[in-house]
Amino acid sequence: MAERTGGNTNVVPSGAENFFDKYSAGMRVVVEGAQADTGQTPKEVIWTKNKASLYRYQPSAEKKHPVPILMVYALINRPYVLDLLPGNSFIEYLTEEGFDVYLLDWGVPGDEDKDINFEHLVLDYLPRAVKKVLRTSGADEFTLLGYCMGGTMSTMYASLFPENLKNLVLLTTPVQFPRDEMGTYSLFTSGKNLNPDLLADSFGNIPGELIDTGNRMLKPVTNYIGTYVNMWERLFEDKPMETWLAMNKWVNDGPPFPGAAFKTWIKDFYQQDKLVKGEIRLRGQRVDLSNIKVPVLSIAGKKDHICLLPQAEAIMDLVSSEDKEFFVVDAGHVGLMTGRGAKKGLWPKVESWLEERSGA
Image 1 (cartoon, rainbow, N blue to C red):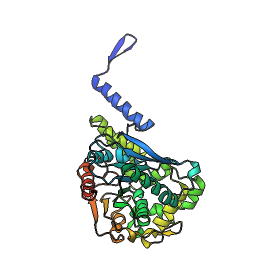
Image 2 (cartoon, rainbow, N blue to C red):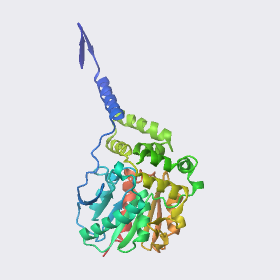
Image 3 (tube, one colour):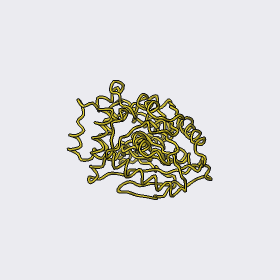
Image 4 (cartoon, rainbow, N blue to C red):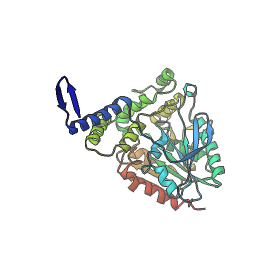
């Protein structure tokens, strides 16, 4: 590339031009945020309620298993992490294995949704979504698969509505909240350091950015510095960027958390550990996890700093199921779902476990 200034010609070496292109690409990500075409597995909306949508994914292979899967995600972050990119999508993988897959996306709450609580989500939204899944699939039973807080809600649903439930799969699902085993997370959930009533009364819905900051502060160096060190290394070493961009987009795409549900989540679960004590009541109905008798698979990550192993393993002693398994992978809260490790570990494990339990 030649640049003329007066009568002089300065030749910029092609290597320097390549450097500037990579630097420019990295700075665009830093300033504008990561861009990626996520959630590409074909789907259709088959039911809506308020901001929530129920998706049915188009099968990419012949249907082999008559029992459909209903996935329930958390109120934090967006569910497209389950369908990140073609070739790196848990949902795509399951459809290729012949499963009929559905996803309940809670959507993005507005200011008018600040009073939504777990009574609404577990007693109103979930039963209607389940009814639509059964009607659409033509099945009599279904598998409920919950991720993180979506798994916690799934356990509550399973204890209250055991009919038609065939299997329960929980991914990084906190059930018990022992303060002495919560590590750094207790700083953000103890009554001394966090007043959920004050936050909810001030904001209405809790901004996604605020929750994201709290989670990132559990590992500040890794999350604030290591992430972008990894980006620059990938750019300048010409490594693939697609998954990094998709994950960075997802991490920064958290929706607001309905204020009423946030108060309950912090006070009743984290601060008072009511779920394992059998003290959670939804419109007077007591949530008793011993009511769960269906096959249960709970999966957790060794490196997960958001849902620690004891929190996920606790379900094993609380359900009445004879067929139950706790499976640990060497990954973090999100890493267990995406990337090479997921394709070799979590995905085949869930598929093989369900294959044995999804017959007619």
